[in-house]
Length: 306
Length: 251
Image (tube, rainbow over all chains, first blue to last red; front, side, top):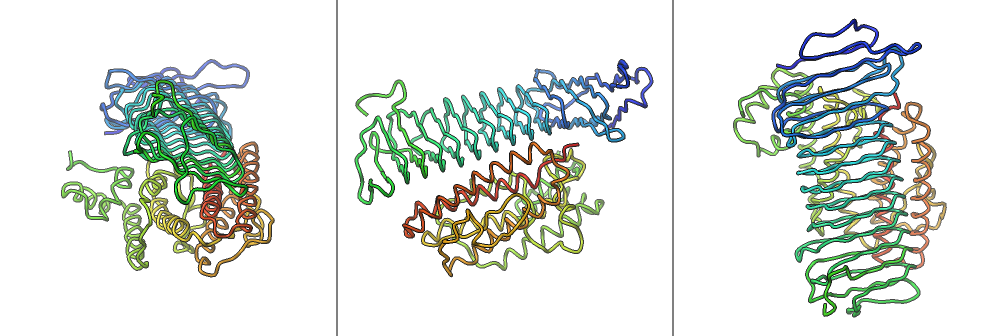
């Protein structure tokens, strides 16, 4: 059975009944504040769905099969739905007014998180699968045991330690993904893409004018595709074995590894196209930039004999 | 657990598998039970089933490479409808409610059918773009939410080479971009002006990249690399417009 609570600042009088403790907040000038402080049960693999317009979403995880919610809204109407498998918290305007809203939520560490904001920041730690998005706010996600889907238009996006892959995108914001395991897909238009310590068998990056930096291990069966129209591409890779396809129209290509041109490869005024192998081949790497430079570096620990 | 009742969101997520016939018996029964009692989901089921049926009438496509990662990414992404099949029943605005903003309760139900249509369409675009290396795409690059979508508009070069065999892909790009621009124009007043400015600046960046790619391609029309570059930036433009079309309102 699900329960729904609507907390309207103008309608609340005193404390609501257990389990939801909702109260009319302190009045400051003409401002009202609605508030929810409660803890509800949620199955360990349930879903926590949070959305707001402006303000902040902060999520942490714990070992309990419970969700603790502390939410405030300056002028909006909080809506709180709960069932054994899903907790939903949202806010809507009251007579056209909203103000800032702030959620602090603790959820089961294996729960799924959906967090959406228009201009507010989203910060999340933990969760099995995390879907975190903002239009102009920053999105920071840490310690995801499953897949992370993160997105912002103009805000920066970062993911640290995700074990089930990452799909990340921004328009102008910076993308920073570190310690990622699993498939990785990162796109921006003008934002830079920085990938650190990636352990994946499938990596795809695409940006129009942003730079791309990659460091990580290579799966011999893996595919790694890096693309930027006008940005630079820097790859720091071990020498364990890879086949590289490197192309640029007007940029330069540099490599710590010897580049042996294969049949069909070319280098000249109208573009550079090089295919070469490292350590006998293996992982397939494609790096393409129309006008940016492409640099292939030997990552620390890579053998000189490669 | 498979005998439990499904909610609308669960049904929406199971629908593709159900229509493929890959859902186990218990969940299939749960889907049928749900649509018997939910008019909206019944309508969704009918719409998606019709799309799947229409898709079977499409000519067979044989991708030159594994498209699934991109298709999967697009399934996960927010999408907007291409097909005009719903015209007369719902306006563009109604059809393109920002799915990622709706907080559940079936708010994005109608979009699921549109999502399937777009996945088919974009898969077709990807197929064409990745298999016709000698073709040149000419798609208009216009300012956000407005103006011409004619072929000569992109990057302002006016020298793009048209390839007759590629006209269908050009039309797909043209149609998708035009529809997305229409949607963005309709929603513009609802969106944050700062965000619109960011979108606009980045469209300019992409249009510049389109122009550069076209100019280079005009000098070396047989370059597969340059063709791929052009296709890539065109796809980026579509993605950016799609993002803009699906932005949640500022309030």
